[in-house]
Image 1: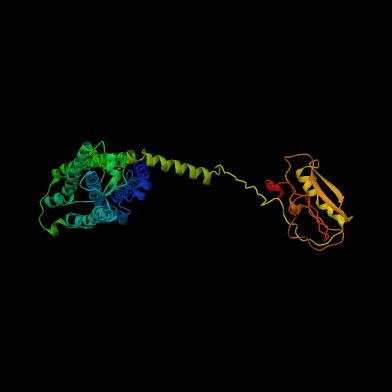
Image 2: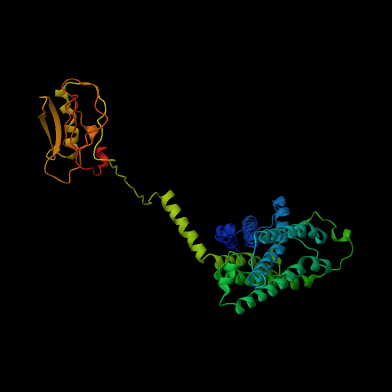
Length: 427
């Protein structure tokens, strides 16, 4: 019986984390607090359902001391978060507030932190005044906080959430009224207000706050009605806290059907609220972008199947002439051995090597393309040319025309075709 409870709780805890990235970047304290409280309570419900499945054994007492207080705090934090969202939406939609400055945003964040985390912590401490004993253990549901059902407990534990719900409904109505009045120019108004909201986000936040607060109001009213069935008088502090360290256990087989149905309905309020929160924010445009980015990251980083674009940059010569570098003297008969490397790269039929003699009767080697305009010029550092008289250096500048041969100082120059891009595998 109730075997599905841990699975439902953990699934709801995962779902409520899906809209977290967008709300974190937007720094929406109220929505972030809702995510935090819903996640923590779902985890607590799941762990309790696993530990106390079909049993009421008293165990993990420290865990129960902590989690029962967190459950009490969540009962105040969730209505407070919905109220903060509604107030913020009403202020954004109001035409009297022309712009939302950074100072206003910082002030609003501080107030929301106090309402969503500060007041619940105070409420946890105040619960001790109406706490009859340590806690209760209910079969299949785990440990739950105990409250001495009396008039002070009603005003301290169950009335404040109803007050927050009422305020939320009022501000939600004001926000909806502003939207209906200015629905034609509402998108421009949100942009001018620097709120970081679009019309779609605004409507989703308003609808989510309205639905969540309706659920909270119904659950608080149901709990208030159920507790009044066993209302007891408040006598004194010692009587209320008598035998405070005891732990009561409740076996579902010995409980009336009404009580079992109440436990079941109250337990599902938090998972249902988590699913509703997920439904409002998990299918918007921002969420779709997050899903796409996540899938791309998994594809590129995990499965390594991303497409890489390779861009090859071709080197270009700066001009039609390049000065020949200095080289150690070798025999002129050996200079021809440096040319086949270029011939093997561009093809043997594309280049021919000629042996010419100048006016000074000195032999020189010249490489010429063979009647093809698509053959690139020979890179100058692939050719070793030396003078016959064992000159140790070459001129640092070349003649003004490619066909000119200077023989006054025993230097030789190679003809160069007009500059064209050099293939990257030849450089």
